[in-house]
Amino acid sequence: MSTVSAELAYFTPPSDGSRPFTTINADPATGQRARNWKNEEHTVEIENVRGKESDYTLDTAGFQYVTKPSKHSAFINDEDIRGEYYPESIELLEDITGASKVVLFDHTVRRHRPGDVETDETKRQPVDQVHVDQTPESATARVHRHLPVGEAEKLVKKRFQIINLWRPISHPAVDYPLALCDYRTVDAKKDLVPIALIYPDREGETYGVKFNPAHRWKYQRGMNPDEVVLIKCYDSAQGDNIARFTPHTGFKDPSAPQGAPLRQSIELRALVFYD
Image 1 (cartoon, rainbow, N blue to C red):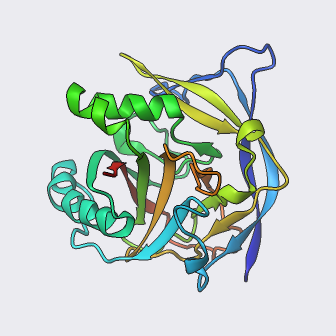
Image 2 (tube, rainbow, N blue to C red):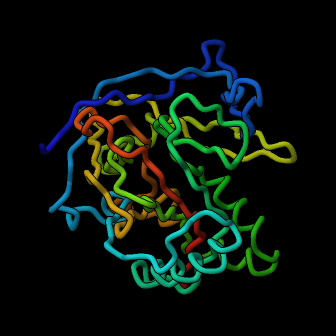
């Protein structure tokens, strides 16, 4: 099957015109994050690009598929992930991008548990909301948050990126795969709306994505633990022909066989710098 029809949740702005916000921490009782905006469901066609992965690169589409088995395979203990999986992932990102410096600043393990309440970081579920992780302001703030002041000031004057490294763990991601929107089909001026991300001690920012029938969605069906996708969340490059971000979301694949193992995945978030 080359495409599937699936519902994706797009962003709609608050009706009163107020600034959109989402709290990072969910309500322990409901598992829901407070926010002042709503979803709008749209049925879209999502193309399976297996066998055509080379048509999509970080600088053209905003994402890139790579086959690279991981030495670390447990993905249970955060310290082990940082000590074992981080170094090999930095090497992979440097090899693919040609970057001069890569700094991993966090990771999230997600396990699909239908009916469970997402009460803390250990119970993160797949995200079923079309979004972009960073805005230019929040991306620059990330550099200053994770690097010494003097070094950060120098690095943000050159090209830098934020890239997520996403990998299924344990078994293929069949029941709730990841869909990515080709950057070349996004109208950056009309489709994106900044959303304040409220932390207990600070404020970040992401982009909500409004529906556009021109969007073209892609996924790699049956993506397995030896396969990764690099997702560009921000690029400071100014060229018209360079992808600067990638809208993405988890989605329920209607072609998944009944009883398919529930998705488990890990995403690393990286600051990527160039000389």
